[in-house]
Length: 147
Image (cartoon, rainbow, N blue to C red):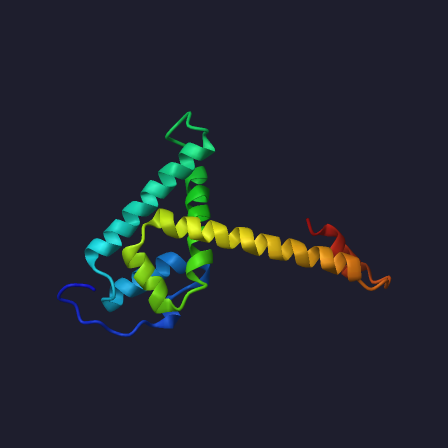
């Protein structure tokens, strides 16, 4: 818990689903649920995760990329973190931000995204097998254009 800071209640309006991890971090800090050190550690972890993503992206040949590419890679890391943290009650997600490395949250997010991808693929196969034989163009176009 944050030192010398009164803990207040999280304001859900300040937690944005399109930027879940960072907005939750900011709101938890504002409320005193995480300390300066916890927030700094998490942000450093994001930098380290970005560095790893850049290394993977460049196949280890470079540690630098265009700023647009770095932004896209950071968005990818955060998307994976979001995917996992959003499955948890807010207080549990805050506790993980406080205690678990970004890499650990990212890896759990990647597992979550793989599971969701498998579920979506399975549903698409089922829809294609059981779709109604109606000549509705929009209906058929949506089913046929899914990957």
